[in-house]
Length: 379
Image (cartoon, rainbow, N blue to C red; front, side, top):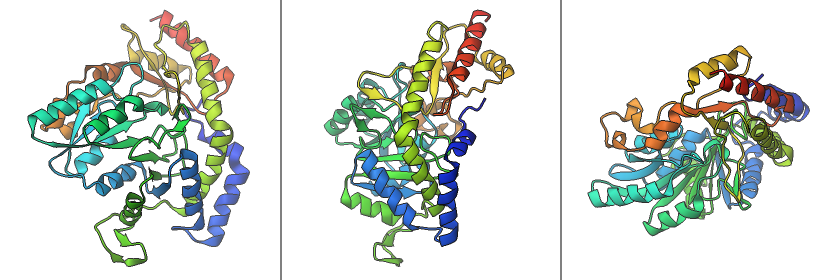
């Protein structure tokens, strides 16, 4: 059993993928080929924003957004404590101070109440200037933007939506990667929409920021002359080959893969209803793209033992994430490590992610459910 079955996906999409790859090889337009522009247009239309700028990976996408806003030393950027390292790494790499904020135990996403408390604390202390909020759509579920966006507006903060796992999720039909002033995603192979290497994208409705993003992604070049560099940028372009692959995968994602993972999640919920595990929650009006299907273990369950037993039955599991951001060694000795985030710490010791992908079979889910019930009863 595969945790995320990319082999099966390739088997299904093989004719279209092989043709798309062969066309790129034949044209030999490997950088900034026409497929890149087509992909950006389709992604912007799908998400519902004016501009999509592709780039080398999801981390670069976050970095580009922060550079456009001139985030740097002395600035505070508010980041969920329960997330992948890049969410806090990127502000820190620009010289800003990530202020880690606790999350909601039921959705795993940024807690709006804790966010406002953190903003007020930083403002009152006066050491840093609050500049932006990084909201993460963890496991495929959009954050609580109904509450986060008004808080950002109230305190004059930019909102950067980290949709690396959230692409395809939505709130009342409004798509993830459209909620931020700038939003980003990742096309890492295991993401809801993944390529066959690294890739990322930035989304915005701002014409000015879009132009700056395109410039910064290619060494700060002038829009009309690539050898006239008007600002300090970076080298972060999506290869034509990856764009061609993503065009094929985006069609499948829109037509049936997103529906398929939601059906798989519903089957999981039914299969695990009596397992004693705490199942993931999707609030009313929201739709997840199920980058992960993550349960929480009740008190008294040793996660490593449970993983070992499942592995013996050839059922893979993963832990996303075993350590909160404020306890990462990279932030040791800084103000970032001082965060009080008990929910994040608890989640890091209790979450467990199960195999999840659009090609997961009902029988596989039932097998996972049976084994989990047996393991939970015999613990």
